[in-house]
Structure formats: structure tokens, C-alpha cells
Length: 65
Image (cartoon, rainbow, N blue to C red; front, side, top):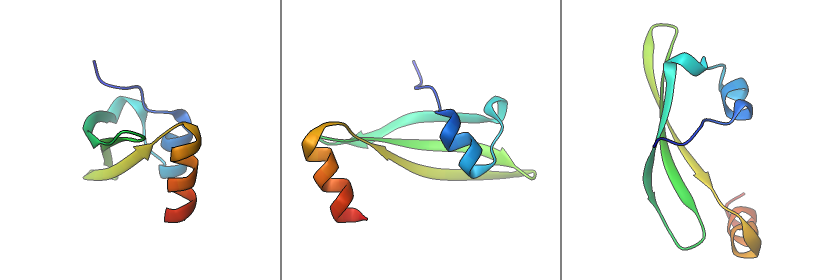
């Protein structure tokens, strides 16, 4: 089953839920990655989404920021 796209992501990117899907795309021991695909202004758009929880993920995201 495809993960649900968080409304914060949809709002930030200006995407419509009906035109947007997200599928698993790799990952690691402390993160999950996804490919987000949508249609915006008649064009196909693809995005990379990375999520994580816990202290290891917090350190990883702070380092990437």
C-alpha cells in the first residue's frame, strides 16, 4: 500500500491530493525515502522525500541542514 502524502507536503508544494502519489524509494536503518509524483500546471513533477524518527534521524537531518 502506498504511503499517505502528508498535507503539509501538499500545501508546501501546492499539489492536489488527487494528482499526487508517493511510493517507497530506498531507505536506511534510520530513514525512509520516497518518490513523490504529481501533476502541476499540466506538467509531471517528481520530488524526493526523506523522513525519519528518533535521535539518529535528528542528528542526520541537522547535519544535512
